[in-house]
Length: 321
Image (cartoon, rainbow, N blue to C red; front, side, top):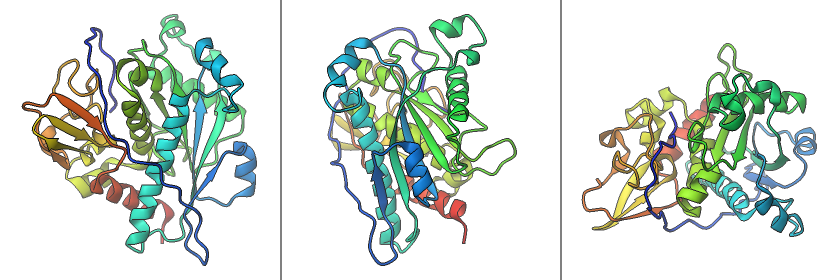
């Protein structure tokens, strides 16, 4: 389940430490790492024999965001989108570092690609309300149609769409839906590709860049964490509970990506501006130090050990013996 934006606004700032980006290169002599690519997505797909890919797309952006970045050599992507992509890259590097340190997934390579912009499909709009405030289902359906038109579905790719819709409570912070919820899923009706949305407009306007990074990671990792793996690792079917919220002092709680939007109290402005509306049980978290007396919320892109183990197990099962 994913967080949504309820009505009612409160003035809360989210801030905190963000782990530095790790640059991981493919190892020589058999052990492969993460291959970062800024090339055109289709060219990379044709050239590389990669079991899994993560492709990051930009949705429509306001003119005030496009213009300053159009001449900056960034492909029109503002810093928020670039930082969100870099955070996803860092998270993937953490997973493969964790696995290799334990002599697991030693030959696995994952490619993270910036795949350009993508516009909504008008044919996906089912109701008049979807024109102004499209639902998560409508956004994902339109995204899927565009990917089919581009012949971009490979059977082993996570497609991450970065939207800028700070007022769209129907999309909330983002999310994914079946049957396109997990990468490499061989269940009936699933193409094996996963589609997910991160509403960076919401996290940027109502929270902070630190929350933007965490929510981009959060929505991406949902596609690499199934409920059975989450239960095997953390004792709960909800993969949010693989995250952690750790006190760094009496008044400060530091939140990892999978716990973001779920670590605070069930009220507006506790942690992220809007709390999650899905699975919500602090007692089931990998670690949660409680919210009594907490005044400051910080966010780290460091994944919890439970998250790292869960994704490693999911990838091991997907890759096979």
